[in-house]
Length: 257
Image (spheres, one colour):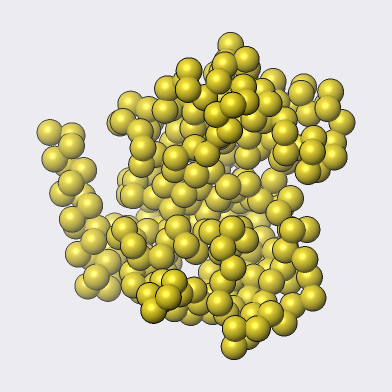
């Protein structure tokens, strides 16, 4: 079954056309990497797919059901997008934890208040997730007391606490140093091994080639190239994709040096 189907998504901010007819299909258990330069529309795509922004035109379906559709700027779907928010989790590049809540409450709030689940059951699952993230001793800590890598692991645990059917990651390692980046990529690899459906915006090319099934290259709000991740990353065919990946590899080699 298709976990996600986006058709002809368009989004503008004023006169700036950020997404120009982007389409994306994700099967259950598939990992999709979205690549592209800054300002290409990658994060906007995720924000529209998760209803944090309202697209101008296009259709979004989750698990075979229409979640949202607009034609000529007018909403034509009859569904309520809020109903589909239980289907996915979103991990931001800047963590987005609630600073005035401790780690455990950050994990428990949405499952208890939004999903109306049993608090004791939620607490038990939250503590198990923290153990999985090697954060068992941080349940009572506040985000300001954690390193960036620890905050990102809490953010992943918080997304998983909602029991999502799929996960979105928006450049989950961009705010981390190389050592902490490795920790987060290890967790995402483990999720992929468990057949978690994921859409990952990333600049980590080697990681994307290893973990993702499919990759898309977006520039100027348009999908310029898509295909099997390893093939697209190792042997891109479009000149703009080649230029971007060559530059990215050069920057990566400089960092290693």
